[in-house]
Length: 201
Image 1: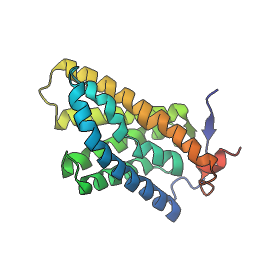
Image 2: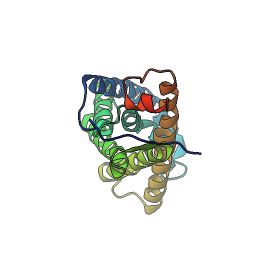
Image 3: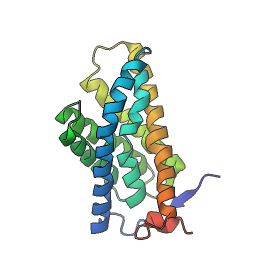
Image 4: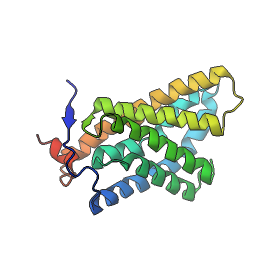
């Protein structure tokens, strides 16, 4: 049975210092991970190009900051904020995509992740919504990549790329981040957040 947690909208829009701090920590840590993953996924993606677009199966590894931050702090804008800061950190560390080539996709991916939580008015926090958030990040990620990098590519690449990016986002940035959030919450580390209190009900 899939858990479905609803959080009352009381204080929904009010960001506390702890919310900003934790979101920033998640974002910075994610940015460092993204940078490290970039050195691994680039050669892996090259090998996967035997099937056009298949390399997008690895892209979900770069979408997780937004969904994770949103699940933890449960504030509107958390996914966008986290993904943007993570992209900035990755760019500063030396992303192979360059500065704007990293920051703009990060912003768009965060927006995609944010939309899923906005659809349910930030009231439902469960595996399904988390997975949708990851999938939406994947959809947004492929859209901006298509616009910025893949104009003129064949339709087979574009279709496979979209499908693989959405699947990868749903799995790595959605379902896996839900599992990670649950594991963190189980330790009691999120006691100052509604996301931590809900796990004790």
